[in-house]
Length: 199
Image (tube, rainbow, N blue to C red; front, side, top):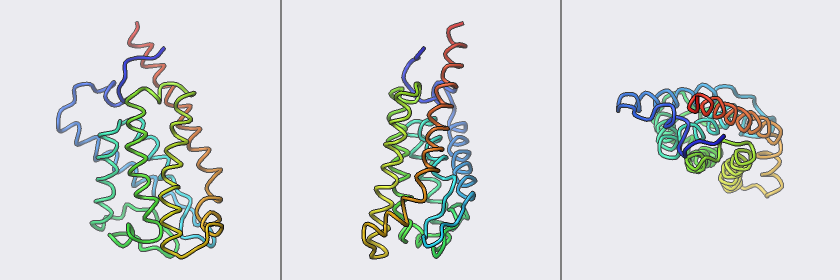
């Protein structure tokens, strides 16, 4: 059963104080930073396999557009300020503004945009059923890689074939797993919430 529109966060905490809202943003920022540290280098690519996009999918869909965007923006600002929140990347500056403007910076900008888009779709109940959650998450992933690949190609002067080989191909299987995890878990959570609300 589907329930009223709105993000999972807004449904579970419909009347949260400013302090609670700040806590969500700080907690979400720490969550993204923690999953970003799960990084596996890819030989020949400055882009590692990380848990960061899983965090983006989960934060975007559970927080909604406004809070999801604010949370990832806070994460970016923390990294620009020098906090050790960004994922380690081969041949990339670890932290600071140089990381955002470097070869892998497009992925970070793509994640910011994807968080907002996924949140906007979740605000319209896209995350409540697998048949809408899965394509929404595919769109989110496409946004991340569209920004990431375009930026990577421009920064390193690669051909499109080289860019796809370095910045997309090694990540397809992992992204599919992350999308599948998010697309199946959220509808189950919504089902539990719906059952409680209808009792």
